[in-house]
Length: 387
Image 1 (cartoon, helix red, strand yellow):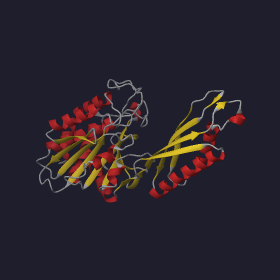
Image 2 (cartoon, helix red, strand yellow):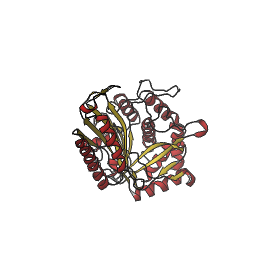
Image 3 (cartoon, one colour):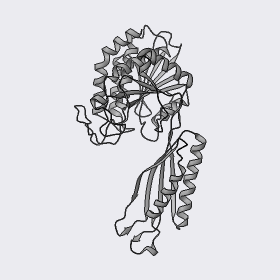
Image 4 (cartoon, one colour):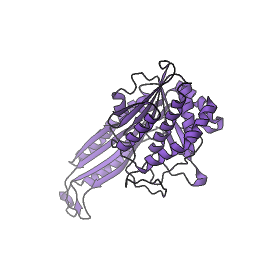
């Protein structure tokens, strides 16, 4: 069976690369994945796979029933949305949607899973069980596409017993994969602060409740929450006060992110943020409105499923190409699935330093060594069949 999968990986490799490039050239933002969804559905139908569309708006679910379809149900997942980034790559398949780019590799995830679907479909008379191919919208944005798909029943009818997903990693060389058992990726919350003071002429200091100075004090105090001994991140990426050199604004807005690996600590820090912001603003007779948009939970790789999946990867790729990787403070809404069914989420190496392919995720020059797809479609097929 392994040799057949390798042969089919060779057979479908160029088609999968073409699909990846087509998706890359036509990226769509979260909850706007209309054309990508159509392409996914058309490709699955051509592979004679049962298709359900418009799941959680733009989601697609393919179902393949093989011999003894009730013997097991394995779900495989890909995300389809892109990011609001202006691409700077000089390639034939560069984004044609200016200001939108597949800078997180979801084009790779989607093309990879379509390749797996084609391989498993061709093997349907030789393998057992039911396989669900879940293509979800909006991984990058709250509300989560994964949560919405779960709420619409993608893990039911038939009930999913085990789930597998992957994410590209440019820091890992193409041909290699990485695994981490247990808590793997952090929870993610969006923090929004609105500081309301009293603006006016910058020279009339005695008349002001300067929200910029209040914001600065709040940010410095919030910095004390983080601790290098604890895997937690509280980081701010936006501060906006619409003033000028001699104009103090009435309002300053701040936005950031909170990442944790412990739900109790997560709740504790959320409360600390609120307390610090409100108390400092009150000292200046101002007001700080705190809004915390709760995102995905901690991604937890089931230990048994991860160990067995890692062994299958070692069998398919060889021991030296399967790595142990550390926890990541990045977040991923695949986490929602891991709280519902035993699951494994692994990292797919797509880097190639010799070819200069090493830009990080969410970078305007992010790209992949496409040879990684030949091994990845075969590996995920091998994992699915033997799970």
